[in-house]
Structure formats: C-alpha cells, structure tokens
Image (cartoon, rainbow, N blue to C red; front, side, top):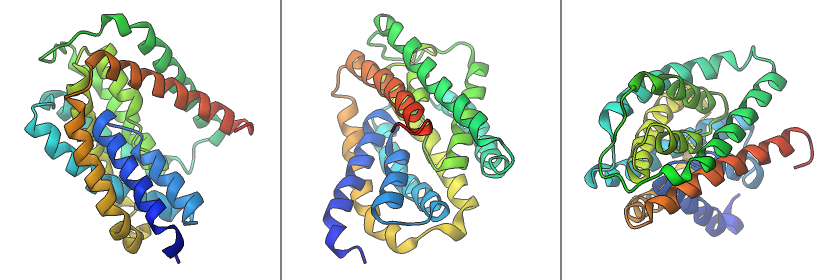
Length: 252
C-alpha cells in the first residue's frame, strides 16, 4: 500500500528523528501529520503509532545525550513524574474538554512562550552546568507536556525546551537532552494507553529511519552554538503557535 511513497516517508521519518535529537521536539507533530495525511491512517491509530515511534526515536536520542552529559537528571525526574499524570489525564479528559477552549489555551501557551523566550535570548549564556533553583516550577510544564502528548500524540516539547533555556537557565544542549528524556517517558506511557491503536507494520517501516535520525541529531546538538539553538527553539515555538492559530481558524 505504501510502496510508491516508501522512500519519501522514511526520509520524512528520519527528519522527524533529527528534530527530536537536535531540539528535543517537533517529531511528534511530524509523525502525526505523516501518518494521517500521507499514509491515511485514522486519527486514533495515527496518534498511537506516533507515540510508539516517538518512544523508539527518543530512546535513541536520549542514549546519545546521556553519553554526552546533556541531561539534568533532577529536572528530568520532576518533569517526568508530572508528565506521566498529564499523559493519562490528556488521554481521558480530552473527550470531555471543549475543543474550542483547549485550542485557544494551546495556541496562547505556544505564542506567549515563544515571544517571551525570544525577548530573553540575550540572557542565554554558554552554561556548562544547569543552574535551576526552584524545581517546583517544572511540575506544571511537565504536566502540560504530558497532557498534549496524551491528547494529540504530539511531543509538546518545543515550548518546554524554550522554557528550560530561558527561564530555568539550563544550557540549550542540556535543555534538549532533558526534554528528550521527558519525551521518552511521555511516549512510553502514551503508547501504553493507545497500545491497541498502534500500527506495528508502519512502526517497523518508519522506525529505522527515525532512530537513525534521532541518534545523529543528538550528536549534532553539542556542535551547534548554544545561542543559535536557543533562538531556534524560541522561533519554532512562536511559529508553531501561529500555525496552530491559522489552522484552527480555518486559514491554514
């Protein structure tokens, strides 16, 4: 069924893996779009398969980041615990939440995070170690990241990475590695919740490209300018928020 598009699909999956490896986000959205609009999978099956793909991809990327010392383990623990709650809540509460209200809140969060992060770019330094002091501030971000993952199959991590850089004062490289660790946690939980909806044939086909891309991406992170990476995270957050606004209003 996918023969004529196999190469293109694998390439896009590899690109999604690179996104996850380099900036700690973007892969989930790419997977959902790829599975839904290119391969024609039903939404629920696309979400489950996207979460499974994010699991194997994030695992490959996390291994590289941990080896390079780019993970703040304490922050990852705070984010991961709250994210698990968010995933379960997102998968169940989305059925009862007003779609319009949720869309409005999501667009607002992305746009504001992007704008504030851009305004704080000058404060980003080439930190070698994290300087987080108020860990409790990470809990609501982990919860929100998990909720978006459980509800839509998105990694929801681009604003999280921007937050860790601009507000929590982690170095961009450590922010990406920490965020990717959270992606692994949310994806595992989410894939478990949507287990019956996973298309394992698609998972096997796209998994190789995604894993390869994520591992290469994790190697690239330490070689990129920290300030440039921070700018990329902030701009992508704002751009995604604007895209969602246009998409939800029917203009995108």
